[in-house]
Length: 343
Image (cartoon, rainbow, N blue to C red; front, side):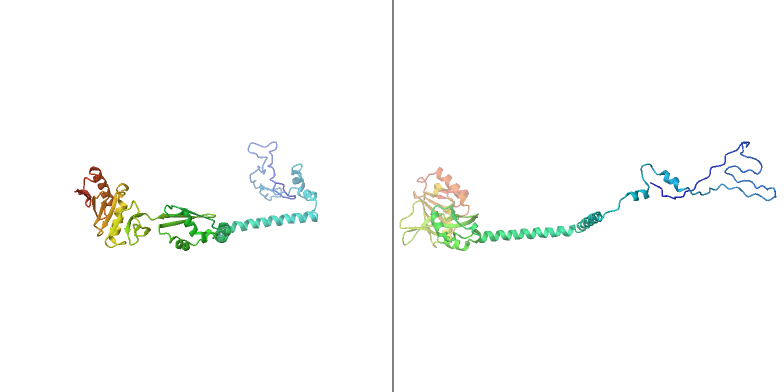
């Protein structure tokens, strides 16, 4: 670091050198003073005591030329550098001012961002949530009212007795309606006309298909009527009416009629009997819910009792018919399956 011109520093005077003739103790004679030690009091020729010598340093101001000479070579002095720097032109001054103003704006912007990052994050989260909600609403509106999602195809699955084209014709009024606006109540009303449909489920397959999955009623037997025979399911719903008895179905005779407890017990027993035995059934009678009797095609009777443990009773009956075929036995009593009786 360059010392400024005119800087003063204390200079300590050199200690006096011992002259010739001095002794080992540094004395030059009587009344002389050794270097660095207080002198002794002496008297001059007039008899006045001499003052004591002092060794305190005397500050001496060094000339300015000393420090100017100590400046490293090749580095001009401050005054020289100031004189060597040319003054700025107005254009350069304006450029530096603009650069300083830009730097200040950048600094202020960074400071604002540093102290407001929490509020900016909350605002960003709110904007993202609102944008997602608006996008969802727009998608729903487009799907509900745009012709891009209109119904063009109705697919029917699960039908056996009912022709699929009849169901499609009944639901044709829904064609052209956007899938989200398909009237489920109207579909229920249209499918209620088909007695064979026990239940159904609709499924939308964008962009233009509606799938109707149908579960048909399963007939369990026939009931004699004034016009012939009515094919019914386990709930007593008439599936088909014929003047002649449909083959492969037993006649259900319930004392209290269709819908009674006896009819429901008889229908439950028919559903539990294996297919090999069901094909041999001729008549099922039920006076009460605990008095179900099966009449086989060969004339043999099966005392079944209540519909409880029907699966177990069916297994026992199947084993008895293998060991004692129909024709050799007149009656199979499986009302108590653990102790079945043959007559």
